[in-house]
Length: 168
Image 1 (cartoon, rainbow, N blue to C red):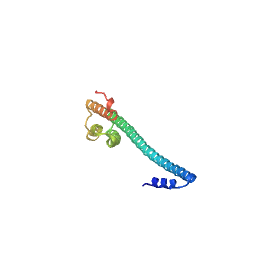
Image 2: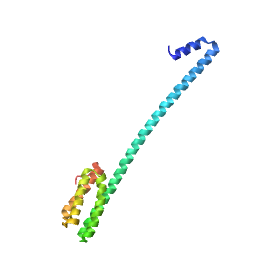
Image 3: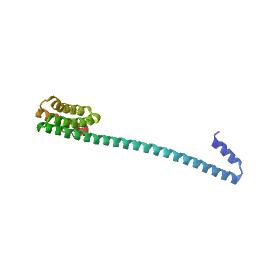
Image 4: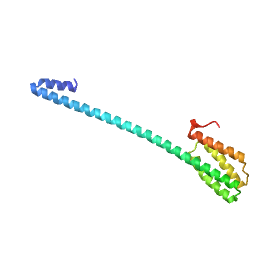
C-alpha cells in the first residue's frame, strides 16, 4: 500500500469535518508539489534551450568573424601583390621591391593561418614569384603573373562563396 493509500485510510478513519479538512489540505499540498515539480521541469527545459540557442549564436558569430577575417586577409594579400608587381614594373631599386615583398609576406602569413589549403597554395605561388624577382633577380612574366592572380581570386571566391563562383 502506497503513501496515498495510507493517508486515505487515515482520513477515512477521522470524523466528518476533520477528515474533509485534512483531505483538502493533503490534496492542496499534493497539487503544490506537482506544480513545483512542473515548474522545475519547465525551468530546466528553458535553461537547456537557452544554452542551445546561445551555442548556435556563438557558432554563427564565429563563422561570420572567420569569414570577415578571411576577406580582410585576402584583400590585404591581393593589394600587397599588386603593389609588389607595380614596384617591379616601375623598375624600382631591388631594396624597394624587397620591402614590397616583405609586406606581401606579412599578408601571406594571415592567409596561411586562416585560409583553406587551395587558397594558401595559390598565395604561396604568388609569393614565390615575387620572392624570385626580389632576391634572385628573376624577371616577371606578366602573362604568368596575371594567370596566378586570376587563380588566387578564383580560389578565394570558391572558399568564401562556393555556390556563387563563376566557371571563368
